[in-house]
Image (tube, one colour):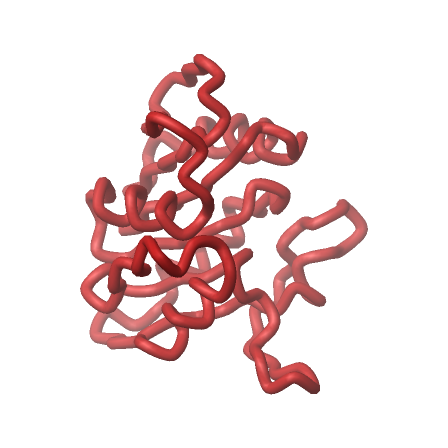
Length: 167
């Protein structure tokens, strides 16, 4: 169903909640791939942790995660966002089987609820006054076939823009 890819330096406490909550769902066709940019030795049961030789940054980390993913749909997620997994998996399951889409970008105004950074029951696509969709770089779902590796020379800025405008 879906591969969830999270680059991290282990500085956001929310990632530990995300991992713990994900581990409760062993009957779901999903995988969690953590790109460990910190070089800290860390292991979690049933979590694919990829530790590059150095902090490669977010764009190369997304590339690594997508290239290692098993499922046809991927979610690029920031490490400081916790998902309501029952709601998220329901949303994914409810997508039409023949839906051919480039990217679904979450609106961060609907990610924060009573619980800090909790995905609410509203997933929307909204534009801000800069002409960019909210959620760039923090919550992007796409079909793996439409993911293009972000050029390494792009380094850190606007890799999420590149993905959005390509797909």
